[in-house]
Length: 207
Ligand code: AMP
Image (cartoon, rainbow, N blue to C red; front, side, top):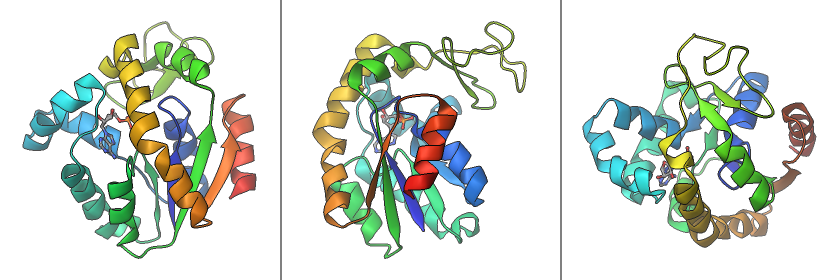
């Protein structure tokens, strides 16, 4: 089974996807993480993706479909996987359907003002990828990653003006795929408000 996490930026797809990955024993594939890593390492992929990412816009479909295709064919994903951040528009959803694998979309619902609050308080570890929230789940030592001791940073695209653009892109391009999966009876909806544990137990119940 391929699980697809849907929801606004900051809805908790990464955090919930991590927990689900551990519970089900299948990997989480985040196109955003793969692209950010490529940008950091300045690979040819990173060079192609950088500009769109900095503006909060989508990277070209051909690039991201290629990334996901390679992952889905790898041995890691032979028992399925959890997709975080893909598909982001109808064309990507159609490309995913062409793989012919069973799909279940999980729509994590959080109001827009709540995600804006969460994203402005989000800090990430540039080394191990751990994610913190300065209000709800701060690191033990201010500004330092609990797991690996690296100084935390704010994601470039979590700055307010970029967040606005990402939300606009989500409304225009990604939201329509919620209906796409609903019509195929492949959608479950989860209230994404409350603690990480509360949301996760609702999510497990729903799937
Ligand atoms: P995320 O970490 O999922 O919020 O993704 C960060 C950025 O990576 C997005 O704002 C896009 O620029 C790019 N990105 C990630 N996934 C996709 C995708 N499926 N299609 C196009 N661009 C993507």
